[in-house]
Length: 435
Image (cartoon, rainbow, N blue to C red; front, side, top):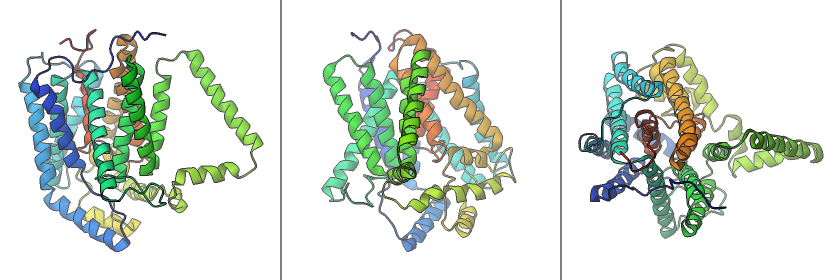
């Protein structure tokens, strides 16, 4: 059947100026530099040295990351002040929730434990926000899908090339984790975003050659995601894919799918020998790693217990934006947990530590409002870019349960903020190139 979707993903469509082509490449380089962190499995002694390096970074900051974040802010300023588009206005309560979250982050300097650290983190987050605003001033929502594919695809290609050329690509070894030139968990997020963006673009494209290319990219991204052995990211991507498949489905299809899952589950439980399910499940989710880690979710539950005790002291406003994880508290966690955590391994835990339950409430409103609005705009405009934003936000909400993603100054935070800005401040048009 012929596809009727009038809005396939654009590749930085609209006016083909040199800046519109060069700027995304600069953004790819900026976020690669921010995420660059070659990974090697380490021993306990080496872990202690890594904690020392982390503490030194907290004290003095990372110069190259600071420079790159400033360049990101400069890009945002060019987008904001060097564009003739009309200034966007907040569309409903979603826009106000985003603005209030930013205001609360800036205001938290007043009660922060470490004014200098909070000021630095607020400035970095402001640069990412400014960069996202600049992107939405230069480009259309379709371009965000293209940029997600371009950036994550580049990181995976460069990382895979680096591992093969240095002889580090050993997918059949038990302890191997695909990382490229960054930590496996960071690379896993790139794989997941590339996989989801390729799937959305695949379903929206009418050209057979492009569909075949996107299918190959999606398959490669999923395979590399599996090789990172990041269980949380893989589970989040699969759940987000399931949520995407339900988008726009009829109630009959949703009920039929739910009943089918229940029937298959019941059949397996009834006819397989007792204990087989547990054995298969634990082996499949362990990815060859120590099964004892599953009981504490690789140490996360220990971190959460200690974090909750600190939350009870300042529950409403937190310790200031990014101010909680200072040198003293990292050493405290090292004494209690056994290793020096530098973040809470949960977006929600870290936001409460930074901005209290008030900040968490605003964040939940932002994400829930973004998902709700993306569903509405997807049904209203039939543009695949809003389906991607829906899938991206669902994935981020799920991933945030056991990984700290937002508001770290990385690619995924940039994509989230750009998507929310499109949804909250850019009223949809019937033409993706229409201003």
